[in-house]
Image (cartoon, rainbow, N blue to C red; front, side, top):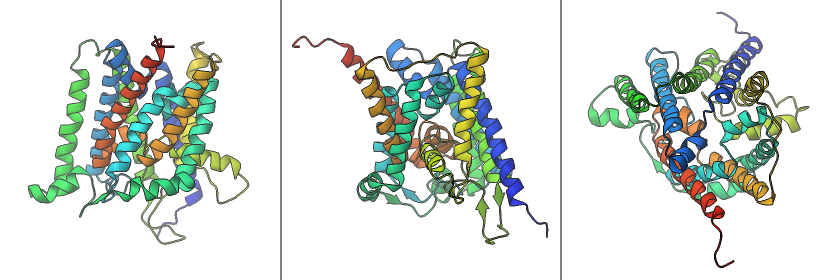
Length: 373
């Protein structure tokens, strides 16, 4: 029996994650890919291009995850998104809160990292507040509130909550075959919608959407194939190396904020180790910073005034609580999660868009002078 060097394999997992997210950070910095920007563009300037970038990335991620599963490279049921417990209220409330918060904070979790790489000091504060709030929502008093209120409302399915599992028995189709069929149909539908606009079909837009979708797919492979051991030589149990959830993971940028702060503060505790999520944050920032420096777009930016400061603080807190409650952000649920065709992720997507719309409307109303003042 071949002896697995877990230490060396773990290093390979982390370096692969760093390479992918360094590239992703560079792509997002260069192309302006941003889910918050996608929503605000639609409602403020009636431009759908960045929303189409996001939908193109979703389509590519769905196809990528589907093919990885179909060819046996990953087990599609071993993710944090496909449990049989459908937390519909938490997902809906959390996604709306996150969407609203990301508008106030000038970007979602991934955009915050890209902005830090570009020299934005406001985003450094957002990073810390988001991470702290996320940690309190995971393990602190906000977590107790979440578990006893929103998480107490759920539906338990007889199968996993992904569409192939839910529909296989009623349709009388084998789940694996149905996953391939649904993955192809839904993924291609997102892609077809994205590229249906002639104005969207530029090299930069296509590159942004495809690159982001491939990055999500690549991290699924890193976590679910490269870092997967059917039997840990130490525990004799199945393990996904260096994931915070203990399951197969792709990119998400809320809970890893909390884990990164925990790792930094408890660095001398040998039980605290670098994980895929933490390394992804570093890769995103450095990739963005590299492009910003090379293109001479790096510049320091700070808060304009008290209201700007308050908006970013409140937005960061809403993203921290909302992102954990919804089980992910616009990347975690809106790309990684939806690539699994999980019902919760499908519900979260319109929640993010609704929250983003409400955030945009709020800021617009704040700009209108009060005639009674």
